[in-house]
Length: 160
Length: 264
Ligand SMILES: Cc1cc2nc3c(=O)[nH]c(=O)nc-3n(C[C@H](O)[C@H](O)[C@H](O)COP(=O)(O)OP(=O)(O)OC[C@H]3O[C@@H](n4cnc5c(N)ncnc54)[C@H](O)[C@@H]3O)c2cc1C
Image (cartoon, rainbow over all chains, first blue to last red; front, side, top):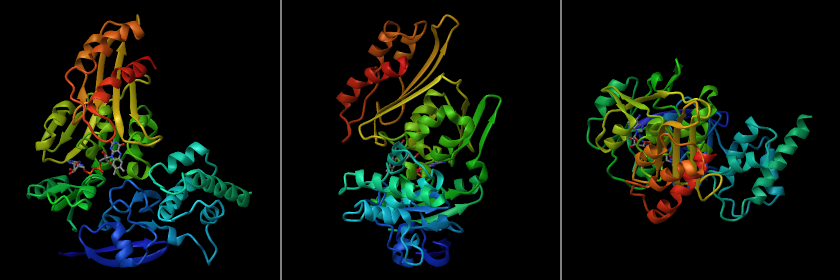
């Protein structure tokens, strides 16, 4: 099968690879580039574990073809910590025990990050809506909702 | 298995590439890439066009034209498409809405196709390079349609002229038990002078509830006025059975939800 070039920035650094045409962004990230933070759960767009941010928008990387992302800026959960310091969302997920098996966590954090980027002080309903495409089988969701609200409060305190 | 994707700047060239057996058009990919991931061998190649007209929204003289590549998220946040926001937000969760296109929704089998239900009630026209078709005709023939849909157009409904309801079990996002869109016009005395009712999940694709529409004409929007329409709502439908609900259940709850929507 013909290889096609894909080129984008991933968490701020330039990436260029050749992939088989039709390769999903999820497979390109995990198998070619080595960023295993997006998870392959259902491969049907239903679970949200593969969620990444493409040009500021939440996307399902299992249903996105890598070659349609040429020139895009992609963010994954592995790019959030800076200099060994966890992002406020990661810290809040740990503090509120919102991570159990951890499989859904990177997708949840991506969905939450897009929310907080646009709505720094979300209501509980905003959080529930923002996470509505992400499935968690461990926590019952409540600790995750609390983590996002906690991170939002931490954000607004550090901004003040 | 990977699928080769071919990208063309013009719809014309993409249409030509789609003539090859096994190729499918790629909109947002939420259904067609999903099918490939599930091992659907009927899809061997994908074609898309990056023509900017496919992503345009034009509003002039009370009519709107939405390019086929416009996403549900773009419609939901568009300042002048507020009337449609509820129908666009009914499709999937946030990530799905950032990907799901208007063009793809026209092909989505039940229980999907919530936005197409809205387009059916709005009596939209569907455009391809071959010309325009009323959405009802288009939906009826969609299984054999090969041409790329370029846009949909319709008269912008007046503020409260368009009503939409999606019934789902999982909140806030879930697959439809059913979806209903209604466009009503009322005469000066409050009686209904025209009604279009479209139903999702009451067949394998969105359908009009013509008997209910007829039963509303000349009636007022109150429990007595709509009773005959509710009685006729399921006429001619053949609801789907899926893990969300049986055909029997859908038929039972349709009048309840239609009544709530009409009286809301
Ligand atoms: C987790 C999940 C939840 C979902 N929830 C909902 C929901 O609640 N409601 C709902 O309505 N849908 C839902 N969907 C289904 C789907 O996302 C939408 O129907 C969407 O609008 C399909 O559009 P797309 O652009 O992604 O289509 P694609 O997958 O790109 O295409 C679907 C089909 O349409 C054809 N096609 C696409 N665009 C064109 C065009 N312009 N011209 C000709 N043919 C075209 C393709 O060839 C393909 O056969 C869901 C999907 C997922 C994965």
